[in-house]
Image (cartoon, rainbow, N blue to C red; front, side, top):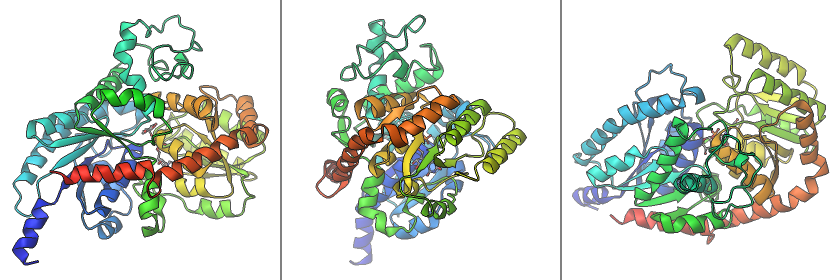
Length: 479
Ligand code: UDX
């Protein structure tokens, strides 16, 4: 093409801005999507906060592999040394809204005046950054919301106004094992105990609770929504949600769709989108363990444990006599730093016989390893999907609101694991680890194998998630 024609062509290219919430469980799936869009020829700006941008692994590599993928960063208003952890979650949320929102607006306006970059034609924003909808509406840009949590949990939040109206959200003297009546399609599977609004968030005025409810309601204002799930997994709740939402694209499990289409492009494909460096020595350790003998233990990127909880898990695991690979993030123990390091060292020394502790693991590779036979998990949505695809049964110990719903689905609806809920005394941990690895293994593995097969089919050529991604791409190409 003559130079001027090729410039014209570039300026007419669809330009998608992907905006994740700055946390591991959000950045990873949204980067998977960004790369899949680039593979389809779209131009993508991946916009994270400065703090995450500095930590993202292999950026150089990714920019070379995907020439139309452009990484950009923006301020979240907090100083670099701010911990940005669970304790300060609402602080981060407010700061992002106050500082990032006007900066995002300025960035979009300045991009619309560039002569060498096409204006942004669509924003794909994280489900908890609804301010992007306000900005997109003002600047008349298409906006699509990406829900990073399970549809079951999003549905539970969408039902909140109705639950309030029906007086079902009165926590004070409720029996927590009582079943919930008015979250349609989840009757019989959710107890008060499992609802995202009943554990640690006992008051309707709680700012965390209000935040998640209002962010979920805001999805209805978007042009479309993307869910990291697949049709048959959450079909009953999706059938309830679809009439209330704009267009819905279910394209999960996204990490598996990514692997099906792009996996061979990367040597350590699971390091894609990591904010910490993974310790690959654990793969060598796993190589020397018997098949299906190891319990992989990880509580994700955000959850914090008390020293007491940590020690109960450790004793329970050691007493179960099973081998284990445990991710003990340096910031995982609530308390003073010196003490934490001392405990971690002690556990490390005491684990020599049967276990290995690492700061951060290449989780997808670990779950796919033939020596791994079970996953003791916090049930974050990415971990749940990754375990499901790898065909590894789960022992769930949920902490955060969405994880409570996921763990109940894992154990009672999909029957691909067991639920510890909020119990973690050493004898229960020991008993449940043995149940997962021995006593109830045959029963659980029947559903695990079936679910893993189903998930893989959905992301393979012609599968529903694969087709939905094609439709999403077509939508993005239409300006
Ligand atoms: C939290 C929520 O709990 C989750 O449900 C929500 O969708 C996002 O925010 P997080 O604690 O980060 O997530 O858990 P999870 O969603 O499971 O994501 C963690 C990611 O980090 C997974 O993709 C996992 O593969 C990766 N990981 C974790 C590693 O690669 N190595 C590790 O050692 C631990």
